[in-house]
Each structure stands twice: as structure tokens, then as C-alpha cells.
Amino acid sequence: MKCVLVICDGLGDRPIEDLGGKTPLEAANKPNLDYLASVGINGMMHPIGPGITPGSDTSHLSIFGYDPYTYYTGRGPFEALGMGLPLGYEDIAFRGNFATVEEKDGDLIVLDRRAGRRFDEGDELARSLDGIELDSHADVEVRIEHSVEHRCAVILKGPHLSHKVTDTDPHTPRQPLRPCQPISEDEAARRTAEIVNLLTSKSNAVLSAHEASSRRKEMGLPVANAILLRGAGVRPRLPSLKERYGLRAACMAGAALYAGVAASVGMDLLNVEGATGTVEVDTLAVGMTAVEALTDYDFVFVHIKGADSAGHDGDWEMKMRMVKKIDGMIGVFRDNLDLESTLLVVSADHSTPCEVGEHTGDPVPIVIAGPGVRTDDIEEFGERQCARGGLSVIRGLDLMPMLMNLSGRTEKFGS
Ligand code: ZN
Ligand code: ZN
Image (cartoon, rainbow, N blue to C red; front, side, top):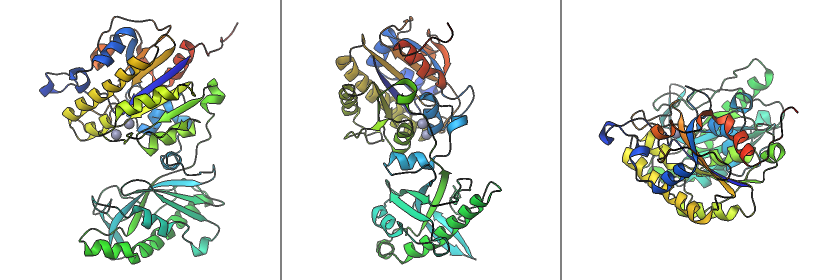
């Protein structure tokens, strides 16, 4: 039996007055999702646990069946893996921003955490820093690769390194770039913090002198003269879905972070034209690619980002438009998947209520449709409706065992 798991990032929401007290999902026109609810079993899911506000990375780990409290080792390695960078288990990976800083009384003050809205120099700046030598720590290799916009991945390779170090990113503008500090007693953490600080000052010098900086100055744009680092981590050692459940799994994700979590549990990353990770995503193309991928794979994970961005922006109209787009993709599944032999699951990794503008610990709606599913009498896919469904309330960690049960892949516990 095959399975398609669709995670709509940040889909869950709270009642909105302008929508007559409905959530954007409840208020949106979504005939295909409603159809799925009517033929499936519905419920609510706490992606990590009741009242826990999930990050997207910890939540996806949990939904894939890996307890994030055991396995989560920071966001940096997921970004790097999702970008397709080779990452050893001893390497330390960070997420990086090209940023604008100004020197003041010996501090580097962060004027802009992302060096302006317009930023096209990521590739050449990353190249100028990739492999940079850190004289006193010549045994450490520095890899820097541009991802999108102002973002990059930074990897340290070498002996005696630790991810137990603080961010240099102050996270709010007009604050000094923070010196990296060890957060554990050991020598490796102390040494890593020292290396990061050296990297900060060396990259500041290289970037300030870079030709792109003069060019940006001439154009009146903020100069990218520093990298801010955050999310230090090591690649987690996770048993793959193949080892655990015998699944050949593939992923289509809207951004590197989600692809990285999927890669870390052994999913192959499939590229889809139009899978932009923005509200512009071509959900119909993503849907067709997922259908085609089922020829080669048992399990296909589809991640759609836009609803989370709409929630962060407090834009419930946009969230409703995203629901419509997701509904279009479910329509592709309705037309092209045989629900007699395929499980189709739709849920979210957390709620991002428009009126909060941030992730919250509210549970998310979930529907499972396909063979062997005990249906209920829910006929609409929404927060309130799913709360009355036959699945009642589950945790993210429960999902994979439930899907394996439905697909006949579980073994009896006891005799
Ligand atoms: Zn998320
Ligand atoms: Zn978010």
C-alpha cells in the first residue's frame, strides 16, 4: 500500500471576527478537502504535545515518528542537508545571514539582519568566503554556500568541534553582533566559539573589501559586510524510514529546512518546478509530481509552505487563498489516486493563527482517507469539524504507527 502525506505549514488557526468567528480553513471554499473529510477519518493532532508550540523542524521530526526531544540537534544541519550539501556526523552546521554591520566603539552593530530587501550577490559573496583560512586553526575547513535571498549555510569541518555554542545573530536589528560563546564546559565548545569569532572578523574584512560591496554602495544599497550565524547543530543519527518501516520514501518540500528533515530520515529529495515555498507555489504541478513519484516510492511527503507565511503576516485572506490552492492539489489526488489502494493524509505541522502572527501550541486538524479507514460522519475539513471526528486527538508521534497499521506493515506486540 502506498501513502501520500501532505503537511500544510502553519495551517491551523483561531476564530476570526471578520470571518464570522470561523477560522480561515473553515471559511474557505474547499470542496476537495471536504470530500476527503467525508470519506476519511478526522481528528486533531498535537504535533509535539498538548500546549507545546512547535518549530517546523521539531514538528516534522515528530510527525515522521522521531521524538524531537531525543533526536533534535539544531536547525543548522537540516538547512544544510536540505540544500543537498554533504554533511558528516562530526561537522557543525549553522544557518547564516548576509547582514549589514557598522563598527562602533569596537562592536559590530547590526544595522540590517538581511542586507536590504534587494540582494543578488549571495553566490559571489559565499564563494569569496568558502574555504577561508583561519590561520591559528588551520585544521578546520570552512564551507559556505549561498541558499536563497540573504541566506546561506555555514559548515565547520575538523577535529574537536562542538555545536554547543551560542548564535552570533542578535535576532533584533540595532544590536551588537554577539560574540559566540560556549554553552557547555568542554574544550571543544570553547574552541568552536573561538573559531566562530575568528570567522566573524575574517569574513567581515573579506566582505567589506569585496567588489560587490563597492557596487552596492554606489547603488545606494546596504552593504553585506558580515555573516550572522545561528542554529548550530550536528547531523542527528536517525534510523531511516527504510530501516524502521521498510519504506522507500520521497519528499517534495517548499524550502531547505523541511527537505533537510526529510533527508535526515532517509527520504529522497525530488525537485518540482513551481514548488517555490511561497504563496506562488504551483500546487497542481506538485500534486502531479507526487502522483508520479508513487510509481517508485511507497511513501511520498508533500510540504506546502504558504499558509504559515500568511499566518505570520496576519493575512487571513491570503491564508484562505492558500487553502484554495491546497484544495486544487487534493483535486489532482482525487482524480489520479486510487483511494482503494492509497492512503492520503492531510494535516499541518502547527497552527500559525493570523491574529497571533506566530506559531502556537493549538492542535491541528488531520484527515486520513484510504483503504481500511474507519470513516466518521464529518463532512467538512476544519478545526471545529475535525475536533468531532473519529480519530479524536493524537500526537504527531502517533501518526506513523497508525499509518503503518493501516498499511499492514506492523507486527504484533506480544503473542
Ligand atoms: Zn511550520
Ligand atoms: Zn512559521
